[in-house]
Length: 287
Image 1 (cartoon, rainbow, N blue to C red):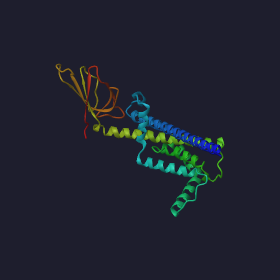
Image 2: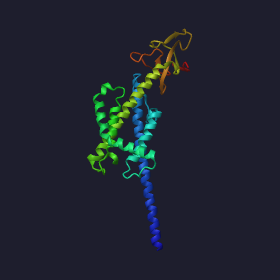
Image 3: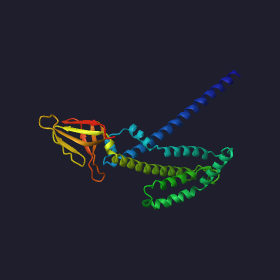
Image 4: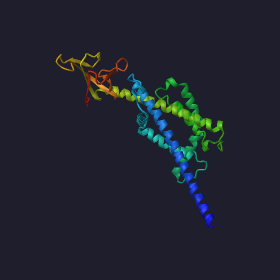
């Protein structure tokens, strides 16, 4: 009896260790997937943002952590609410035998959710229609892949009216994978548009950004609307002074600057390296 009890206790500890290890593996896999999505969206956002100023985001030397953190720019209040609702709904919809809803409000919500799920083909139809009208629905083109992906994913839930869900490759894995790709397409398009819109807002409020004064021992080929060049005389070590510039970003001693009268169609983006006869001074912008 004692040996049996010890064996039972040992097997219990072993099962608990396996459960903990399995849980840790699931958490690690989900965390890796989440970080990969953050990196992707951050790269899309920064690429679109700096492309507006004619810069390549990857040439600026952003690291993995910086790109991942930049994805948080996408998390506005409506997006956060939508994600929370989607996660809660997905958790409930993927339960094969959900407990009956208690209360009139809960039953009403469940009835509404079942109706939405059973209309997954309508999501797909509308998404295809919008995809054909892609050029006419801009800047809301992201709604087409979003509806397509939503329809495909809803069609894999137990409430889709298909009875038991078969776990074959073509009936389960391929639709889920395709729906996931369509959702990522929708997120990337929306993120790219958000980056461009915020770059446009930054250009409109350029005067509020950090002001930059360039002092140089030699004359620099800087000219543009809003930029002012001064000759301080031969006795000054830094003879030439340039004002009317605003900092876009600084990376490793290299300043990316815009003149106050910058035009997104024709305006130049200056790249100035601090040192070698050039001194950069930073001042507050106009508040």
